[in-house]
Image (cartoon, rainbow, N blue to C red; front, side, top):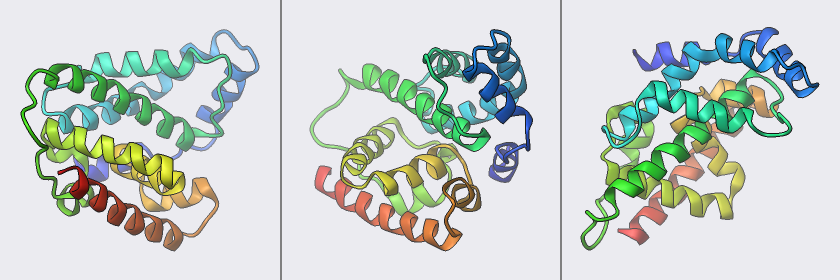
Length: 200
């Protein structure tokens, strides 16, 4: 599937997902199951992006969808404002699952140093470009540092690079201009470059 098709799949759909999120939050026992059915296809597309980025080091898209959904639906509260927020949180859960498995598999294989990461090429393209596991782990580590230093910038990377959301969708979810999101994206990429060079 093309990146444009993935982006289209993640476009906010008015009404139903947000309504089901609210119903589940209010204690509707059937809402969670109906929500899973409604978003399954889109979650699977999102999972496929993460799995391709790990080059076979992660779970299958199907198992990743199920594990991620269990993680985010298991919370006592569902603090998801709308469909865009829900998919952003789902993407983060998927990334953590893939990273945990990639770390486990590569723990005994790492020699000295890290692989060099061309973030300009990697980050401008989607992670569907089959990022090597070492690069994926390096980006994750750099992003963790960025999250501590500049959470807003890290969120743009999370939503766009990993979650596949467009800059317009991120701007709408945040209530800011697309120009502001693009500025954050450029700043985040520059800071990640610094972190990756320091860790290289």
